[in-house]
Amino acid sequence: MIDDDEDVLLAAKLLLKKHAHQVIIEKNPKKIPFLLNNDSYDVILLDMNFSKDITSGKEGFYWLSQILEKDPSAVVIMITAFGDVEMAVRALKEGATDFVLKPWQNEKLLATISTAIKLKKSYKEVDKLKKAKKQLEEDINQPFKDIIGNSPAIQQVFNLIDKVAKTDANVLILGENGTGKELVARAIHQRSLRKDNSFISVDMGAITESLFESELFGHKKGAFTDAKDDRAGRFEVANGGTLFLDEIGNLSMPLQSKLLTVLQNRQVTRIGTNTPLNIDIRLICATNMPVEEMVHDNTFRQDLLYRINTVEVKLPPLRKRLEDIPLLANHFLGIYAKKYRKEVTKINADALVKLQKYHWPGNIRELQHAMERAIIMSDNAELEDQDFFFLNNDKANSNSQDGSLTADSLNLDDIEKSVIEKAINIHGGNISKAAKELGLTRASLYRRLEKHGL
Image (cartoon, rainbow, N blue to C red; front, side, top):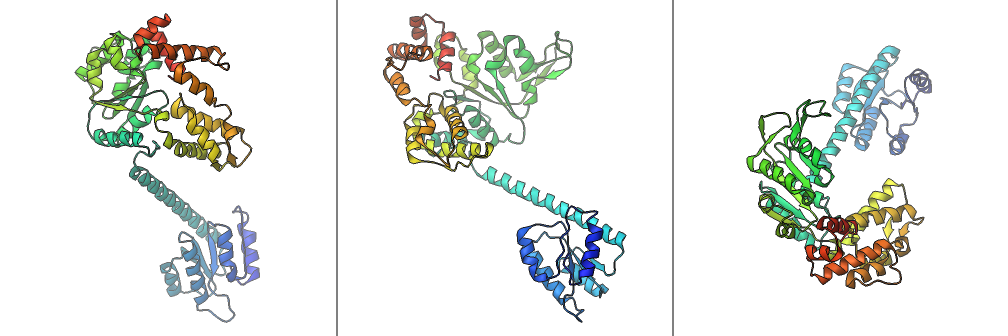
């Protein structure tokens, strides 16, 4: 409250402090800019006249304009002992919220302030919604905001997403673990005609054979022991939107047959019923496995492959887009510095060189974890190469190049990885022959390939 009468200020503070968290009073209106710079206020009570023998309200209108110029959403109640209807109307026209005459009635003043506070809350809500809308528009207008990179390899992926997104073509995304297959799937959905409907993601590698039909197609109450309620499957939930089946290469042949039947008929039947339900989905699948080889080895159905890969998107491993590492590293720096409240603001040149020389068998996911660990452990404002001591570059490079063992490779996991790489190199990348050489089944070899990020 700003008023030149100290008695009025004290009387107001005595009344209002019972109802407000904080009450600030000030005699000198020239301090208004200072007050507004240092804090924000739910309600401002402003006297109309500050000079003796002046009742025009000119000073009050001047300071009202100054307040609103500084904060257009300010809620200002004008107060004066010399008011009339004309002055009240002018005050409202010039941006005041209300007008109160001195001496006031306490109940009326409290009611006026209470209404003003509700108005201020609505202003805040509107401002919040405007900011959210602006952020949403910026996100929409920023293509591929979650997929970071400027390298030619990733630009090719962006171009392919642009071409395929607005169609309803089924898409198969191929790439090593940690390359961002789900991000690409979401980007396709967000730029598609189905963007206002559901995006449902299913990890096929995590679904057991016994739960496959229940999870994907749904079930009726009582269909089996644990079916306590009717449940819609993922296909039903995704109806009208996009269904993303991740790690589809992990499906057994019988499950592949069931999936193919649904995709061909565009219908699902819940377990325990005989009524088929029509489905309308856009299908996106992903795998880190060489499905073409699996078709040749009769471990993946060729007709299912034809059904799911109208368009194929191949994601480059991080070692093929090293120029994107600084962008990615700084992106994760911002995330984890904020998350862990660390004052880490940059990565020095030597550290970036080290990151770009590393082989990154776990791709972007491994880089993300490396950045998180380095930020947690760092005590400085700048990450240095020693903050990434846990990245053993020599071992990764020596093993990946020729499969030979070094003095540092006595760890069993390292030995296993090296032997597997050597077998694959000997047989020119043929998984079946490499598995036979190692005395493993193809499935066992694939599990080890995934384990070592190969």
